[in-house]
Image (cartoon, rainbow, N blue to C red; front, side, top):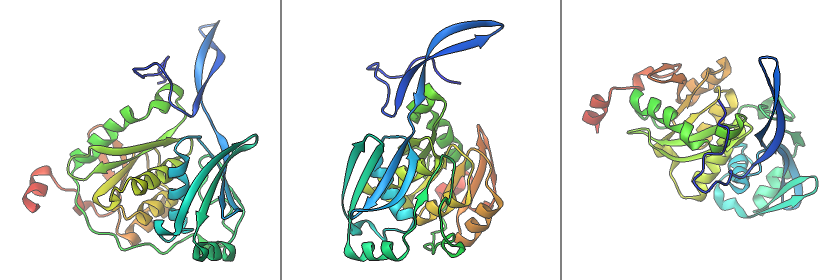
Length: 285
């Protein structure tokens, strides 16, 4: 349910939203009203002057997005290959210029593709089947409590100012394993974008994602699992269901995949033995 006005102490809406006049129809009557819409703009990722991808995204936290996308798509092997990022608005959209190492530029030229992403789209523009599955790191077998997971998903609602006033964005959050406290969250009109922004933000802030789990407000697709695994995260908790391919990849990557996390319940699709009561976790520690 959308709030009628922004929930902010200073009265200013978050970036990436704008007001719009609408007509609400109910019970046979029409009423003029003000509403907030989530911005969605083309964002071009340009590596050393070469355009690689154009994604539709919320125009906020784009440095985080560029870094997270580059790493989870395997364009950067690690952060050290990124020399700098510049965000340049243009009349047609936003260009994000990434200065990368010569080794990275060579790899990009070898596997160059021209992809156009859409909201909710996963592997748009991938030019061969062999590029779908990427080589993933070996994930540690961490433990988590049901209480930590459900607490994180409940708390995530308060970390979504754009969703509260537009009803049109997804969110991803990095959460502590012991109690589910949210240490970082990002929003976007695209669920994959929100996850990329989160992963990039954690890297830029020096947060070790491997010591946390990720909660998302969407379903868990194959690519969401792959991106989480790329970040070294061993637990992915989703509000909705996973796909069959997502479960297959989670099993292969040794990732604990949780779905339908609502209130005090959840469903474990892989490695349910890693979900333990709080008392047992404390004893193990």
